[in-house]
Image (tube, rainbow, N blue to C red):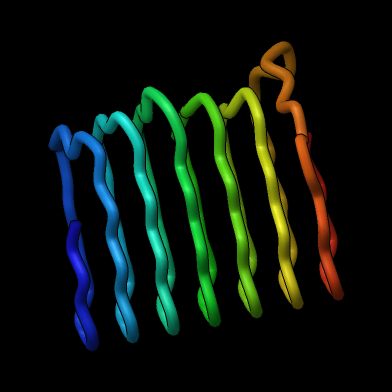
Length: 131
């Protein structure tokens, strides 16, 4: 568990196990990682995950910030955002739950055979595209 106010967090090339990260006024950038589960909460900051494998779940709760996942895979993912966009490129998840207020969700994957099952999708003033 890590909590921070007014600071950025950058992690790379590590096994982060079961992690809970909470930031206010800061960005999170994690690249080249492995995890069992990942729980991230950010207020006034962006989240960037790149080249990661999460065995179980990813939980994202974001207020006033964008999230970007590139080359990330996990079993399940839950994304909740107020005033922020979610972009996934080669984001492979078996089950996805999303709730957004004033934000767009866009997922573009190269491997079309890996279907994403959307368990729940609620959005207010935002578009959702999953390809």
